[in-house]
Image (tube, rainbow, N blue to C red; front, side, top):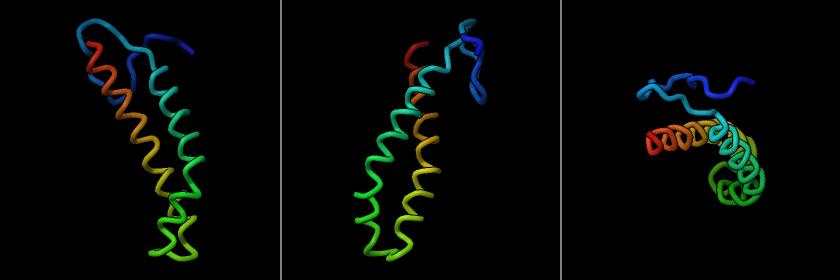
Length: 81
């Protein structure tokens, strides 16, 4: 993989490019944290969703983890520029 290219959906700030490694590390970290927290989240949602709580938990994590990882990457780029 090439380092230093512009990331998708990012505006070019000045003449510098930022590495996508922050996005990758945050995605891996949040995925591991999500996997560890699945039982706790499922037990909380069990009251409202019953037998669907595991599916709702997994679908929710599939949606929120990439969004959070992208937000962390964008925040890092903004603070670094």
